[in-house]
Image (tube, rainbow, N blue to C red):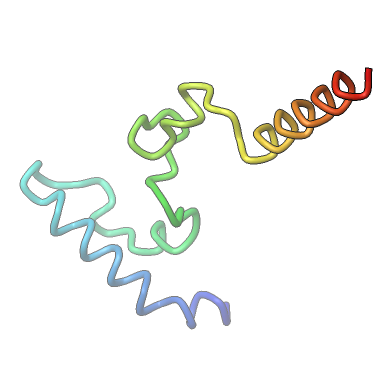
Length: 85
């Protein structure tokens, strides 16, 4: 409960912002549930795994940083192999 108490101000701020942005759609099911905004708050997005705005790189199949490093290492290894021949 200590963490919840420490994050209370941010939780309420995020919840109020959500209510303010979504109030024009009518009554929201999350209107009385500020605790839902404490956990699962993503730094760069909404948390929906199929959201193209937040996860476009993943959904398009863009290589991750680790994959880019592996491709670079493979390219360097092939270059060294063919230069030594």
